Image (cartoon, rainbow, N blue to C red; front, side, top):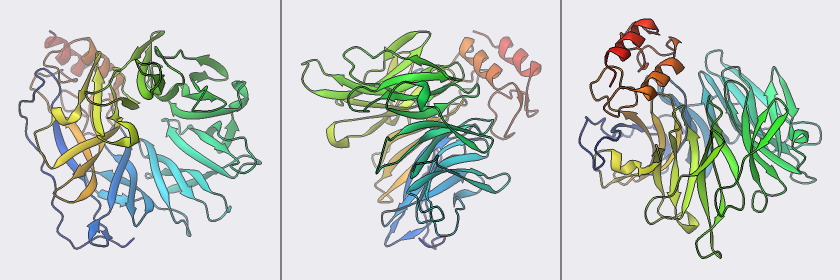
Length: 415
């Protein structure tokens, strides 16, 4: 993969607010994330995977079937994440603040793919390695305390996968807390609550869980469910996940997504003309993003689920017949969404950052046209100094701190 291309890149326009077909719903500004790398006669494909509270996006670019981890920011654009010498492939899978986790081909330990932690602030790369007897690992989530979760194993001798939590330079196998053969850890919140799946097979008997310092809570299946896995967990300990289900005829199977909150499981449903729903991330207001598709991954369509309603993200941006939002992968507390998309104009897979368009009411942080409890929870969840002064929606008075003055502004516009 070569350096920056001299090709003049068409940047997808950042659009202004327009009416959508869903009155009262969020409307989004669209920012393209494009790889300026030569890949034959085409742009390298961009696959975003997650974003942080500042709107920085991580994922991987693909050129000639080779994947390389990247971070994108509004200031720097897309840049490859530094890797150890000899690394051939890498993927960025999660970001929290300046800390990125993912996988890379480990040339030093002669393993398969190996989890890593990279800190952009300190320029420090850490290979997470694996536990004795293992020959691979994957890192899938990181919290502000740099606690990393993922899974490891031995693809030759087994068993695989086995969930781990990595903290203070040590990888700890937590598989023994579950009493099952296999486990995966996919998400972790600030309090250290972990979600994923446990069982003997993701295809047959997997069950979603919440792990809390050794205590395991098994989550129920959705109606007609056969399996389940937790994909992401928010600060309230609510889980977004997915599982295999029987369709109405009791014969065919599909994948449906769910929300687990307040001891209740909710089926998210699916978009029209699709049968599979894949939840990928959840915010503190139980807004869930992901994508729907049919068998063999056809007709992919990114969605957001809020307050019991699932909506295609393509319906919430200005109409563009040459841009299709295919997979929503991450959402932050400001409501920004990282999406994998297809641009026919560029003949390439591109990343897209969707940013909610403010509707002009101070304190309306969820952009629903009114100020209420959800906005208050967003403000309280961002209390204190802003990580990024230029992108801190809850800082209503512009002093780069979310505090009492902002609370008073919000309360003054209540209703």
